[in-house]
Image (cartoon, rainbow, N blue to C red):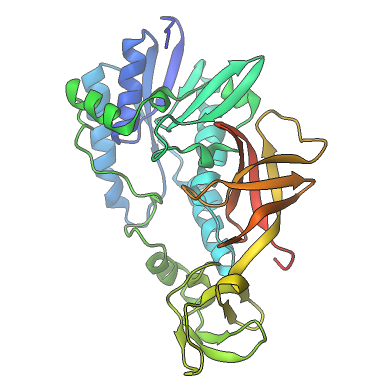
Length: 352
């Protein structure tokens, strides 16, 4: 990475090792670096204090300015409330996708642009390549690749974004943090969703939308009642556990096939009944800025770190080469060609 001394870079310093090394790499490349820590709403506010402290210490170690930016209200409204509303409707939203689109590369990027910064840098494991236009690529570390969360980026945003750690393996990033004695070097891996304390989202839903979590019936695809569920928001399509089968004549692994919101019924079925070959996507963003005019063949990922599935895409319709379990409405479907992210959208089934 060749730096230019006069170029100002705003680094989103989260308090984690990836953003800390991002800032260090940019300082060593000669950029004028400033750290910004985003105050985001959390169910337990005290949880954020450790991250602020370490982010500030990292900035001090690198001798760069450090600022706190308060996005709590916006984050609560645009990410957390959306997360709760979508689960209450029976969908499976991805808050990290939404946060990147609306907060980090939305409000924060606008904030630093207005203040004269040339670039916004984050600790995402992804890469940007320029060849006439900007291309978004997977991170070098396949296990840590975060390109799935970034499909909403536009050409304008990519032109002013840097992902310095995207060309490294995670172990290399940790090694650099230790070598440079950064305060973030021994920080534990952050959990995927930052605004509640558990690694599982269900306890958070139980606390926040208690009135929407109403126990009901489990039915098979023919509509026969075969068991009981604890509340529809607590399940996602393809889920295998968490419901009770009371019909002793039903044997074998069952998976969530559908959530019938009006009837408050959870539909479950055997393997093939839980699989889908076709689905639609809405709110699609194409990284190039141009929607494909004809059918394309590509790969699609329907969950973070999920398998890349071969498919055909035309209009808003995705047809998989082979049926897949766990196609969940509300989740992101992200399209790839080789290492490149073409774009993505939100999975939509005909009945949602």
